[in-house]
Length: 55
Image (cartoon, rainbow, N blue to C red; front, top):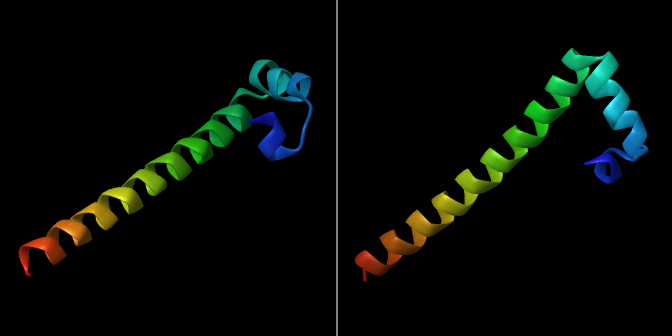
């Protein structure tokens, strides 16, 4: 995560300790992106199933 944010790992640990709200917001952002990618994957799978059934 630190690499994606282009910060040092120590900075991320410091945010977790000294700025818990900032750290929480960042973690929520990563979780949101993960959920969005998973939703896109499921949508594409549903489209494939739909095209198979309509043939």
